[in-house]
Length: 358
Length: 270
Ligand SMILES: Nc1ncnc2c1ncn2[C@@H]1O[C@H](COP(=O)(O)OP(=O)(O)OP(=O)(O)O)[C@@H](O)[C@H]1O
Ligand SMILES: [Mg+2]
Image 1 (cartoon, each protein chain N blue to C red):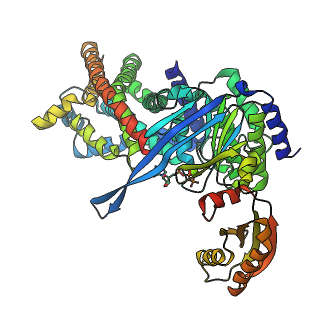
Image 2: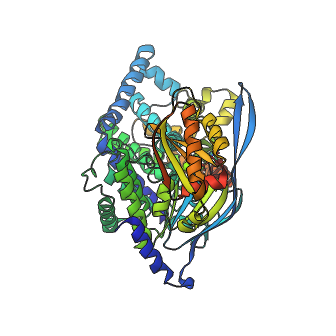
Image 3: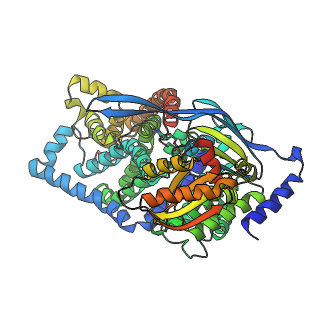
């Protein structure tokens, strides 16, 4: 069964539970966070600069769902995650996890959440994977046989046991192994709420797939609530029941993946795979494309080449294709392939922000 | 309950480290002896044991005095230094946020996770010097002195716990990742009379020395180093003073620590 199918059946199951059984596990209301930084201007002079990382965001996450925070670099995803994990104090608004206030009842919140903030660090280099998990388990209050069994079970669950690396030092782990260990730690205390910041960042497709499948399983089968951030639209589509699209500290859309995509149902995306000759800035080409086609256009660097994307109404696809191809031809770009695709989350983002995407 | 958890997990962490880093462990054993040889060598080169006794104004054995004073003074201070150092290390390895996810106050977690390392360090140093002390002092006197030293190192640590917590928040907040205490440390040791008898210091420096807990731990070391049976009355008195200072210092620190924590957690440095 593919992930999406599984997703669908489980969503249906969940719907049949009835409204009153679906409870908000995480409530975020008007959350504001400003960072104050100082720019050095010479030896003693420095200039104060305030970054408005969160400009009053609100969302709820329901029990047993995978909720995605999707946004480009610097959107405020990590900031939100850190506030919910009680590691960062907000400047305004409120956030609750299972009813506990993340500021006033931080200790209570910590007893019900499991967190992974980064896949590539966060463990002691000179300890083995098993020792690292055991240590953090103890720190979080587990002990004795229970802890021992829990560690073994998790090492197996995330596949580290099968890789036979549980007794290897963390410094010898590959990124994929580190990511698995990070997820295992997030599950140590068998938390009701799991918060993961970019859990598949930098992983190869098999590792990423394994992690994604696990997230869905944790939520849909074990009934845990999963909040996951990503800048990967494909990932958000695959794993999330609902997605909040966050951009420059604001949530610009929040809905199920299906319904978000309906917002761009009146358009298809035209994708042209190409190579750019040296010396042509991407931005210039994007502007030219927009001018020529009259529709939102973007260019992504991908697999050594480039992917040009134009979001157009279905009826205009043909004409837009020839216009775009002409622009590319004028700039001596060699075109490899042209595709017309069903809309994706990426198109939603492009449409909502008018941005180049991410 | 949660303190026990912190101590126990900290202890486990330390054992894992020793187990996986045997070379570091060995170096830890050898280093104090090398220092002892160096300092005593220089002492005998530039002076004599009798000149030393005259300076220290008591009939102390230079070897035992060295052992006692480095052990106690350095290890008492190393609480602050160590808490600071471990925070830089957590920051650098990215473990800091996961440490702070333990359901305690930030300062509690940071300070109490460190105590096992401190205590193990003290115990290891005591264990390695034990044969030497017993050789000089005889077995029974030696054992009593080792006991006094262990007690002094423990009691000497308590006044500094609160400030270690403050220092921890401070280190999380600052941008430059240097351990400021590495230059403060020698100063404190100087004022405490660890290098240089405190009564030889100028008046203002003596005032400073009187409010530093290390001064009293160094004094304890001196008493422990007196040849023969240790004088129990002044030792008890000093321990009393240390506990009194602990009360004042920790109350003061407690008033400030909430502010420090808040600042650290607002900054976004975790
Ligand atoms: N500790 C900090 N001090 C100052 N500014 C910060 C700090 N942390 C984040 N910022 C700024 O706040 C904004 C939001 O950052 P955040 O890390 O939440 O973004 P993000 O969505 O997680 O991005 P990414 O995808 O790159 O991880 C950015 O402009 C960032 O530069
Ligand atoms: Mg981030």
